[in-house]
Length: 396
Image (tube, one colour):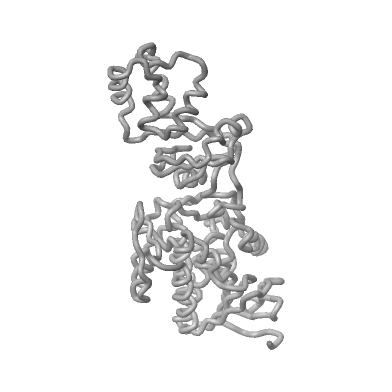
């Protein structure tokens, strides 16, 4: 390789956003090189959705995203929608299906999405440099110079698509944030999102015994609420409802959980008190709640009277209210190790929302997870990757 190779666009990161950007730029006739330290492109795509890639969501809107600027994502999401990506999937002949809440998955393998993207890049003349370490990035009179373990590139445009800190075993690093700061861009506080909770020390021994119990719940925290499944684990609380709520939770906050949404508990208990007055209320509740959960709730209630006949209406109301508003203060989360997304990132105030170009450094773009835009669970983060990548690729 020559000491310095010239190209129009250098994209750092061969993930969903980076590949989409490269495709769109290449289709405009731009010469593009994509650089990544991984040995293969789209590694997070490959492992997503249990290997079937939840590639977008039928109901994706700006309301499904978290950012310090809640309006920032609107333009990119409108310029390249979920329907635009679905059209590409259909044109490729990839079979897919819709699960709950508009989530779209490949019938076969996530590798089909990767193959579609890599084929599109190849057809657009995009060059990939994999297993290549980024040593230094600098601004030059003509644009940018990117020095790598395989040589140096001189480009007019530079696109940062290096992702966040989530799932470090897949090679995730904070490089994108470091580069942003290098070019004068503030980075908002980052933390793990869409991540399981861990028990506080005073709950671990007793509640950890419910590991494997799953149920549908209504969970809320700091004004955000979700109706999805919750899973008890030995270490804490997981499942879609908890992952969703985790993105709104801060240390010390309470998570409120309705353990029986859609169930008329009062009517059930009233019926049971008539039919089986000597039965324990927890035995009665075990018919509409997971049995082990009902038993644990009873254990937590202690030695107080539990026979239906012995309980006053007020006492029953108090028990049912505790089920309707089961309150947990998690000890923490599992952190970046299992987080599906990194919350926070490059401050959107310094980025053009239509082109994803820096307002501080012409020719510099930020896309995907490295930006302070994070989606809900269910394909929304992939849609942000497609939308922000397309926006940058049509400009860089």
